Image (tube, rainbow, N blue to C red; front, side, top):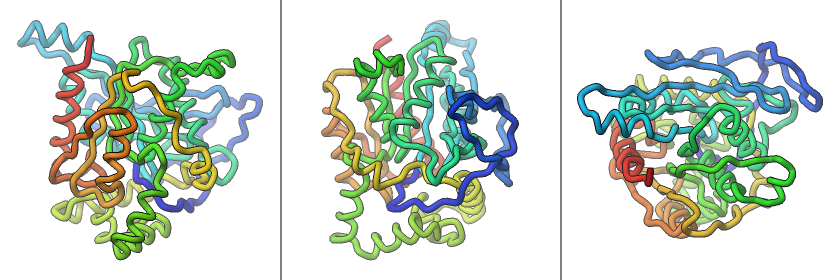
Length: 342
């Protein structure tokens, strides 16, 4: 989701009844006051973590066409897709456009709402978790629910969580502790915060684009995007996005996160993410030409880190999966998915 400079959220409260296990301390919280209504063929369920906390999962199974035998065979072999959002978003952001698109191409789709976001439970404390705990939650979901190695797709800070996941797939110390990170078929980093975090982005904006730096800080740190329609559009979407759509997503984003994903001071102290061998797996790094948050240098940094050439999609903004031309990014990812070794 969106890469915030500073996150200041209100505690998330939830009313869902769940089983409490040792070490699990829960806030009683409300669901999103304006819930996301699922589309046809989409379902919602909750995955229980070892702590006893539940995370929201939106699912849409891949459909298999009947007109082409080769397509049918390929669809049955497709890896499942697991989507991870960033700040101020939740599982719904993937269900809006990309779920119908990828499921129609034969891919089973799963989107997680991280703790404290969307309809997921919120832990006691000021922050939803850390890079380590969020990645561990994703790993636990994959381990317990999927039979095939999936492709992980992460947006903004969700991309940073995936980067940490990748770095720990073969971590011998974690394996000894039985904290397993299942292997992946590949990973897609969408407008991702780079491996060094967002501090480099902040400083570049301060020195090269001071007005933009002020706007980003006001929009995300002060959460002005929640009430300022124009600023919300400039932060997440292209200028042609219609008001009624911006208002709808603005409302959903406002309801999606009542806790910051991270304590950014602790997060930055743990970065950059550990390096990995260049050929450890297939990784697609994709950015947007009109991204107001992650600049071109941030996109290039992520590409260099993984030894790949990043793809910059023209005419889309930071929220590539929700923007007017959402299908442009989806097509780039689909082409890459179809080229994965099977």
